[in-house]
Length: 145
Image (cartoon, rainbow, N blue to C red; front, side, top):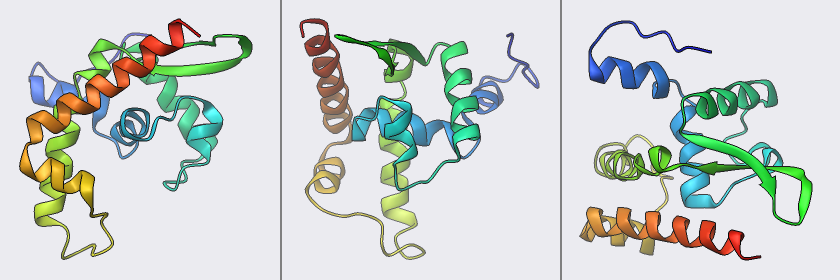
């Protein structure tokens, strides 16, 4: 299914794919929380409706941000995994988290704090790199199960 874009602006084109309230949440859940099955996503605290989740996963797959595959050793379970294109969103997610930490904590005092946030505050690039490396290591270990 071809994607419709509003115009030729790269910023607007990115928002045409990622600009709703669920797309980056799903990518974050995969990268940071290790979610990989439909059930994993439905059990998250963000409480995405199953019909919306299904639609968003299909779109993320169609545009190449994720792939859908089967779990090694269990061909019944679908896995959703980030592609290189999806992993390239890591620095963007870290920047959004940093911006939120700096500017939204007063509006939402329950924003998580702790060791991970301290690491991010100290060195966003290293934090993003570590997230990506951890995800890639997880993918590599799946191949050899």
